[in-house]
Length: 71
Image (cartoon, rainbow, N blue to C red; front, top):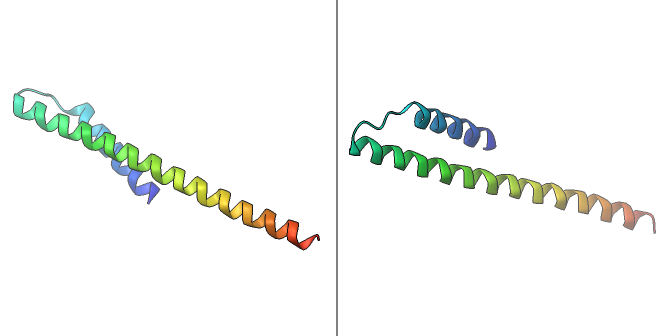
């Protein structure tokens, strides 16, 4: 899932960079793409945080298992 988000973020960023805002309609569309990029980046960050929390929970379980086994 993270790979998909990263690829979509990159494509959205490229689209924003190459867009020329020649009219108000094109400017409005570009603003929507920028908002979409911000949303995607936020979701990507949340997924990374969730992944980090999952890894920490696994490490805690391993430590608790090791601690319980030595008593």
